[in-house]
Amino acid sequence: MFYVRINKIKVFNNREGFLGLFNRAEMRIYGHVAGYSIGAVPSVPPIPPLTPADLIDLDDNARRQKLLDAVLSEAGRFTQSHSLEINGIKDNQTLIFDEAGLVLYQSETIPDNLHLQVWVIESDEDVRKFALDAEKVMQSDAFKGLVASVGAVLAETNPLLTSAIGVGGVAVSLLRQKLKANRDDLVGYWQATLNRAEHYPHGTRDRQDVYDSTGNIQLDYTLFGFDKTVAPDSESIINN
Image 1 (cartoon, helix red, strand yellow):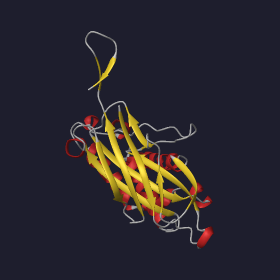
Image 2: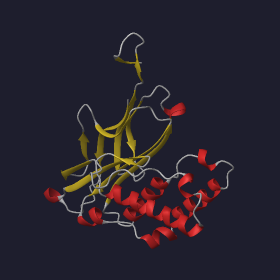
Image 3: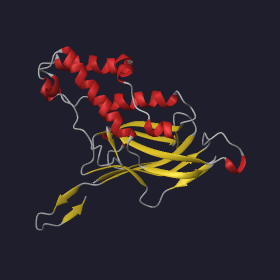
Image 4: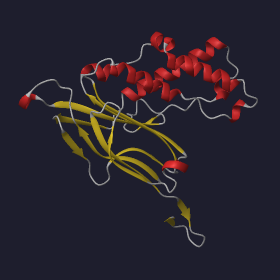
């Protein structure tokens, strides 16, 4: 089993904009790991990742439309899911989670690569309902880069062996740009791209007081993993 969890988040400025006793905000904490969001409601289940096999027989226009649909679907799923909502957050307040932490991601196996993202958002009606505009997505550099990368993949000799198409990364990149346009909505944003060989060779990693990209939040996070194997002389599961 493998877990990614947040143990603590400190918020320096809640972005609420009021003074004194009224300086409290309602916030949502989102965790996003490689296209997977904890907290997704049943109406927006995870979508299977696109692969070259899904696109290889399409013409350019049909392929672009399929990629657009996938990006919009991923963005919609993400904005309708959240890990935790907390009311009454003050400036310089530290949110300490229980011993299990706030679990952002879990899997049966220890992944070779991770792209972690934590969003802390002042939860107002605009954020709850915001979505990506299809025309703006198509005009964005992120989407154009996705289309170009897919074209390069399909030009390979054996594209069926190539990894899944990175739709999730494009979706969250565009959502982040949209949130940054309204600084009062985005309280904090942290991301880390990790690989097992360099960052968690034994399946574990523990970091404290890590600043986000805005400098407005600070967090502690833990990666914890263990392999499950079946003992030769029994059906019991043991931890290595």
